[in-house]
Length: 444
Ligand code: 5AD
Ligand code: SF4
Image (cartoon, rainbow, N blue to C red; front, side):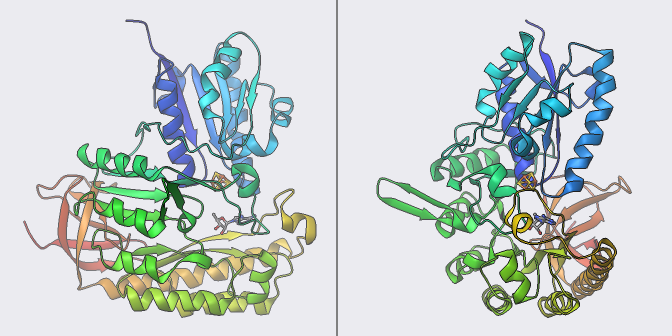
């Protein structure tokens, strides 16, 4: 048999990128590449990059510097950049980073065979065309990482919300939904292969909309179809935009036990004035109405969020509104960031980035401290309760312990006994930190 070449993909940024890397790995397999986790043996190194904040890009630049020396030692090595940074900087990157051979944007992965051929013939290769309809619907991703228990399914691509701070509409292009049948088929195959949890992914999943032969399938209907694959298959989704999280969707979640009780609903700011400048298209009151609907329709639902500290013109009063909104919702978990101006976004063009760095840092620290308090409080409320946990693997701290997640997406560590990854295990919570629950077995 012909010797296989080895590819190594390093993924930065969001879950979408993890999913895209699995699509890329699948395309590379058809080119006689097999994935390796040992970068030193790789013939092809791809960085799947993120542009969401400046520090995400800096991390990739630093990595590229390290790879430079690897390339000097092995001149035949091919180095490529994929994803959002490739899309944002295009051929500028080839000038700035001379040892890069290949640049491919998020909609160009099908061109990899031709592009790699070009590189092998001694030229640089680039494809950063965005597409109106590429969804990679027919490509069966290679599940490279993970434990074989949980998997991502990409259901839509792109974003047209144009939040003022955000680079994504420019790097990932127009919103488009993937054929529903291929999504359900992928979920079925994953289940048959032993997976027990799928996360449906898109920049804005509740805008999902697929039309075929006059039939329209929106996100609630799609979610239900995936939930019906098996009661033993957990279903999650991310991310939802508050503007269109409907009661219909919440009712679908409530009526299927295997749709997880966890909603990620980025608020970004608790100040209506700031939200307006961010072009988020909802007010604080609208957002709180959606939170009330979640708590009414799915009372045991965990709620998580994204928050940006120090957006343009944010005053101390705006910041206090964010802290009070966090307390009002009592988030179970939050991803928290300092505002980072991204070139060419609406905010970059319209508003000065005028909150001083030390003020941004102090506000972010206050937001993190608030969330720490809320997460601990939320976890303490779980002590004494019973949960069904999907085991995902052996705990990092001890091989006598497994870790897994509750439907609410909280991590639980519990005794291994004779359980394995992929098992559903009934546990009682006996302790916690702000980050983890500790459980004991209810059934042995
Ligand atoms: N600066 C800081 N945070 C940002 N996010 C998006 N763009 C920026 C930016 N320019 C955050 C938002 C989003 C999450 C994925 O990243 O909170 O929901
Ligand atoms: Fe980063 Fe956003 Fe691109 Fe994901 S979509 S890789 S978070 S810039």
